[in-house]
Length: 126
Image 1 (cartoon, one colour):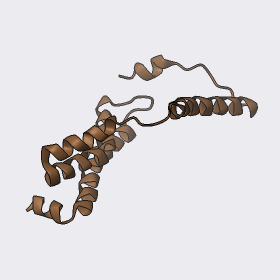
Image 2 (cartoon, rainbow, N blue to C red):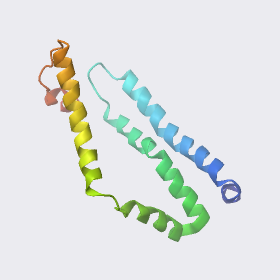
Image 3 (cartoon, rainbow, N blue to C red):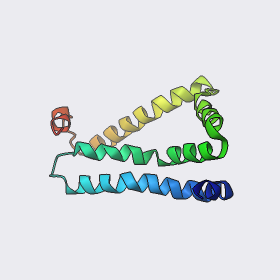
Image 4 (spheres, helix red, strand yellow):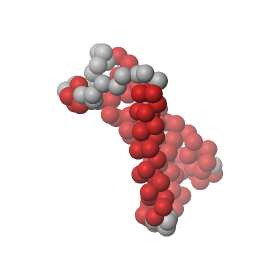
């Protein structure tokens, strides 16, 4: 029954499966983070990463139902195609660094004091 529904309406099925996967993991993660003590991060909240891949997992499920193993393999092989100019790699790596620099410069310019980053505070909560 479920297979016939997916074959009949693949886009609608993708949307429903995507929401089911995403919110099954993201909502509990969100609630765990909200209920955590101040300054701590609950390690179990990392299950939210599964929900972040909801669209990808839904696409793999739909492709598997519609075209089987060969369809899933063809879909995943498309992720390995790297046909872009080298300037895009420079762009992708340089823009976040440049934006970080602009953020630091503008906060200093407007008089905000940035303290040193203390990684022990972050990693000590695990």
